[in-house]
Length: 250
Length: 304
Image (cartoon, rainbow over all chains, first blue to last red; front, side):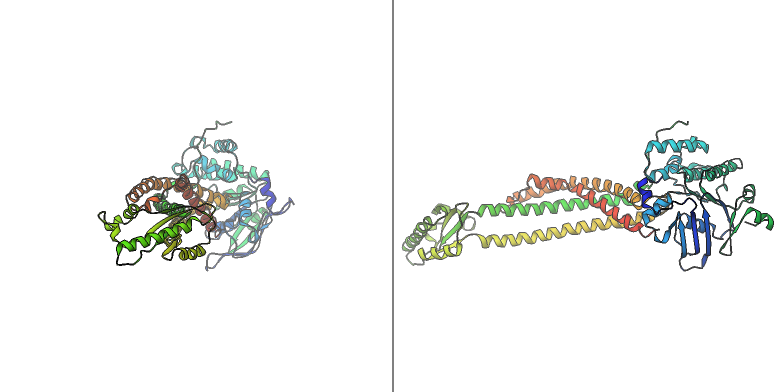
């Protein structure tokens, strides 16, 4: 949640058709190492849904980290919600991040906190009042069937339960952009469709979604375009292209 | 609608578990202890200077050197004549309210600490002393007065205590400067310790801070959690330091009272001085809080 005053502080992106994320000739390297990503060009429209695929080590997590503003590109320009991250003030970057929900492959929960506190985190950093925080978190934890574990520290939960907490934390703020790294990798077969349904519903409400996955089943079950990382470059395939090519190996 | 339980909010950064907390608390308590002792020293010197200044303000001392003559009786009579001349002159000076030549008995008491009580003062070539009291608004030209006095009574010399006092003030100023250096050093060392332990803690909690940043937390959000924790450590450490410092100040004061001569025993701490010393834990709290806050803000600037 971003306050009205804070929204005013951000550069305007009033046009509804603007690109949520834009990358132009983006390259990324760590320290003096080789480029992991090269000449990435990407434009994600508001309300779009994409899968992000590629072999292990292809740079999926790095590309996502550029999207959720965890790092700046080594070269090229990344714009998020119309703001070039190279020229955006730190405090404004924080405000942009509040509009982004992230589900990490390794969950990245704070194990000294309860499930409740973990999910409440994005609301509290925005300064939401505790009454509203309690209402929203309780509802969402109940929806992901973890209300029984509300006060348990996340260290005591199973992998699948942690995954659901991580997803609940990512969506609690009703983000404009949802980025998920293997979000259904650790959950039971009956929970996975429910979580995907949540992503689809959020997308219908206008949230732009990018899901990094290895799951061919997931990709085949949902006919969304695919961003495929190969040889440090990014290729975009639409469902019709994929069937014509006879599939792409994630 | 699911039931909403009451859940006590926990701090996202588990700073209370930091191993450096106890170290900082002890460090701050020692710093406040030293600070309180040094500060009470500075305040005592100030009060001592004030008391000295007050005691000599509005007074003069005139000394009549003894006449040198083999005939002691004659010499004493001549010296007393010079004394009387000086008294007569001083009584006519504007601004002088009282002129009191010290009696033999009073002079005997003055030299008693050095020569003992069995001395016959009449056999000694003793200078005579005249105590002169001035009106509070007296505006005397001391060099002119000294010249006029020596004309009226050639063996008389005027002492307005300024030389004696200026030497003492110089000495006290030196002590104060030394004490202030100690205060600055204590402050710098404490701030430095807080700076480095805060930076160490930031490294320790890097993962949590990254998560907070990802969720949209501004640097201020993280800095405030550190500032709150350091404020607590500063206040509790400060109170412990003060708890040990107050009896120590009383102990040192009681030792000083035992010194004869009345110079050191004139150092008394006023209510305001005690109030200042009692506020040291709050001062420690503020310093700890601000140091931590700005250290965090500055360090996080280097992260995206």
